[in-house]
Image (cartoon, rainbow, N blue to C red; front, side):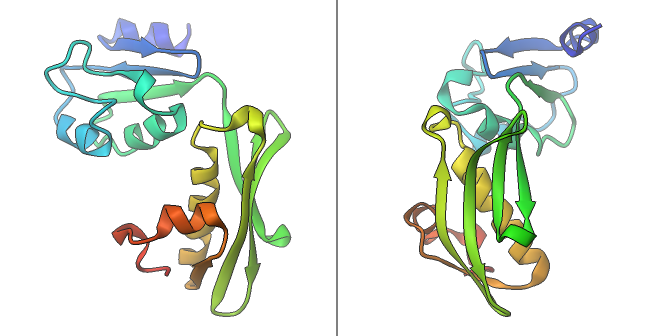
Length: 169
């Protein structure tokens, strides 16, 4: 039995496109406002259907759903891409079924990492992969207690003036 069949048998509704299947159980849902705050274009209470998957990349939708405390929202990526932190190579890398499709490179020092380049294969642009690559480096920097200097134009734009990144800037 597929995840879709299993969840639909439990009362979940399914929303899907070519990249992601989103499952929602209205009887379990207690925190819809968190989804709306996460992305009000994708999740809009009062709209039917209330989930519009055309409004954001699948990876961004998955990030929002990962924060659902009640598990009323679940998902399955149909084109899974893995983001891996590769400390030995001073980068995070994106892989699609083992093929590298992107990277976020940094130069480490004891107290600071300089993000110098973020790139994604053109066939994968617009899917939120570059963002996930930078976030993976940020996550590792936080764990090690180091600051980040974003020199790469993408990382600089992503991080500039954002409260959520003040601790690493």
